[in-house]
Each structure stands twice: as structure tokens, then as C-alpha cells.
Length: 140
Image 1 (cartoon, rainbow, N blue to C red):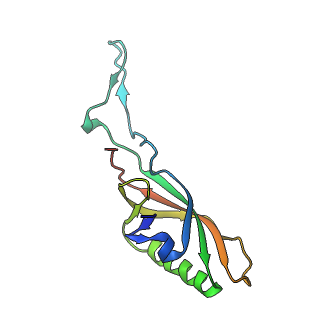
Image 2 (cartoon, rainbow, N blue to C red; image 1 turned 60 degrees about the vertical axis):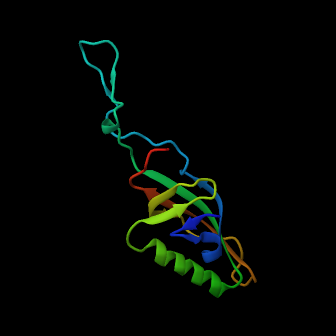
Image 3 (spheres, helix red, strand yellow; image 1 turned 180 degrees about the vertical axis):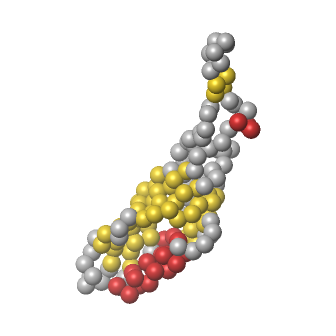
């Protein structure tokens, strides 16, 4: 299993090799107050009950290289990926090193930078894709 977007292998479907990813294994950041310091008591009352704990959204960034054997194939793969990313709703994102399925939406991408010339037989471009997990679940 490789990196999958909506159940489809990203490398096979779009010709994208994920060079590096950040975010999926990061610890969650708590949102809101985490405790209260009462004036008439020593120390702090920590908010540690499950009902008190909520988390901020998590960002997941993929550093991508897209490879195609022709200019037309490169443009077609880029457009197919754009249709999926810009579509409605949440997407599923899976990684080869964890069994968790992340429910994410496309947040932003960097400018596509071509690493080869357009008249080459092979076309390679690099870019970053940023996804956001709006309701991250706790680690199990």
C-alpha cells in the first residue's frame, strides 16, 4: 500500500511520488483553556476530563513530484487531480506507515515548478499539497 487519496493510489492514478509528508503523526494541539488558576488555592486545576478536551485542526503537507511520459499525459494528470481536490466534501487520505484513515479537505498548494523542459520525453514537476483535518481524532 502506498499513499492513497479517496481510496486510489496517488502514484498509480496521478503519477505522483510523495517525497516527504508532515503532519499525520504530529501530536494534536489542544484548543481553548487547559486549566484554571484559582486565587484561593495552590497550583492550577487542570482540565483533563474528556469533556474538557478539544483539539485544533491538523494540517498535513505532502511534498510531491509528478512524473509523466508526455506533455499531454502530464497536463491530463494535473487536471484530473485538480478536479478531485477542488470537488466538494471531505476526502480520505491514507499513508503507508499508519493504518489510520484521515478525513481531510484540500487547503492549498504551492506553485507547480517544472524540473524538466517541456520538450523532454519525461516531464517532472514538484509542488506541495496542504490538507486540513478539521476534526482530528485522538491517537489510539
